[in-house]
Amino acid sequence: MADIQCDETFRVFISYSHQNLPIVTDLVKILHNNGLCPMWDRRFAFGHGFHDQIKTFISHSHVFLPIITPDSIKHGWVHQEIGYAMALNIPVLPVAMGELPNEMI
Image (tube, rainbow, N blue to C red; front, side, top):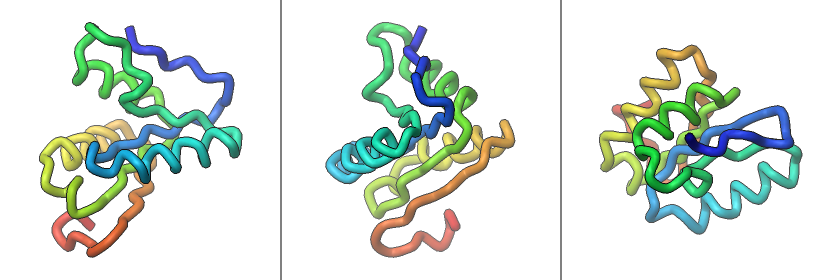
């Protein structure tokens, strides 16, 4: 099972494209330094099913934070993860960088 334990009490799941890893790495540091628990794929346990771990992490988060960039909107999984979070009534706080995608907002 994925490591979803955090010392911090407020969990933030970050959905992103790996092309945006430098931005997300900085964001993870900022969240952690402010007492929040960033939950992202770098915390996944190997060999336990990537998609199952995503669902588990999203369902245990307090906020879903998709990083919306020209790279991330090309992938259907971003839309799927946002829909999954919304279905679970988890607040979605999108962070858009670059041109805003009309169809997603």
